[in-house]
Image 1: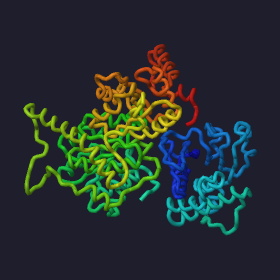
Image 2: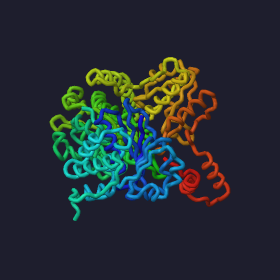
Image 3: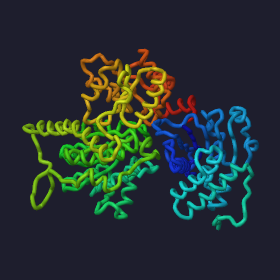
Length: 200
Length: 417
């Protein structure tokens, strides 16, 4: 079983991110379970969501306490909440930030989790470029797919299109694919001209 | 078709296929997405001529359904927590009048203190109201139970609550097969009421009954529940035959054959319990689990048959009878009367406290070693409790308990999740 925990704030689509991931896994023929941390819903409050992926039916109903992968959608949470609680030794950690790990000042974390695969990715910028809004949830799922290979890129795009039919879905799927390529290639993100963004 | 769906959306899809004719609800907290989804379906004309009525309160919602059901309509609503309490008088009326209303309970705690999270306090408060209470373990079972519930309710002409854990199921996204319309129609015939308000053939529903017949009317309501003990397993078997999967039934035993210890529970926690059972079995520890699918009627004979060969039954329950302890464990003790099986009560998951596999395994170990207190409170923060009790002893004007407890807990326990 592969377990993912996603951290963000109310209004950032943290619960939707877990849903997209679970639907992608389902489309890939796996069993998946996604659920929110059942907090009071209000904008800006720290929010968590969870996803489990397995080859067999999932019966467990506890929160994900020892994630194999962690998505941090809002880096302002880094010094507020113990985001890294329980992360597995060789876990994947994906932080939404245009800064590097060193620049974020979380060097002590590296020493606590020396075997983790810790990366930052400018998912908000990528989302802004493709969707016109800095909502990074869908893009980060694309990034997670590349970092963990637990779900395919195509399944992620399909799951996003199902959740958001029409233009919004297309734009978010493109953002997820771009983030997938950034992570898979290891090349830094550079904004291109003539993007899809309908900025006004 | 198998889909990856949120529990509430899945239940709404299933209820729509049951062709309700009147749905009424109070549409805000503690409501779930179920009625929101159903209202969209009604607006789009997907449920025939179904009427959707937003009421001014839960009391209003169920009262509207009492009228609609008495007029011969298939009726549905959903609520939970304080919403169910506000409905209470109408809950008793619906069963007393023998109206086959189906209601989903997205199980949640009851305040004060305000808490929106899952436990079983709400439906437990109505356990003796004369409604059948079925509990779902998964969202698939929740879907299937609704289809069975309309059939059961209308056959017995008795209301049914389908209880599903709030958030843990209602907000969980997992694979669910929603049966197609034709299959549901094949299982659930149109409603044919035994009593109906019809101007062509007038009757009175809701007569006043004095001491000369009240006990008899009550006995007949009890008798319906006894008939449900026969019909629930039959409908589950019929459902399996038609849909090819097992859902519902009075109870479900898992690895209990040679078990010295059996964990008994209602609802979604049974999944975690079975994972714990498998882990302990791998170590050669003889543990099993018994899921209660029906809480009212209480399946006394089935519980007795499964539990009597074991040394110990541990009832894990998401409720608390203040001043006494367990609620479900009392029913289990009654089912085992005269037998040497020890029944232990474990109060767990109150107000959304996570019930983890590790905590269950630790607790089962303590029970098997004979070290479990009775009742046992799973993962209770005794340090915080003693601190607060000390403070209350020291100060007469000690102030509100919840606020002080929150301060203590946040100071000592700022951990995730």
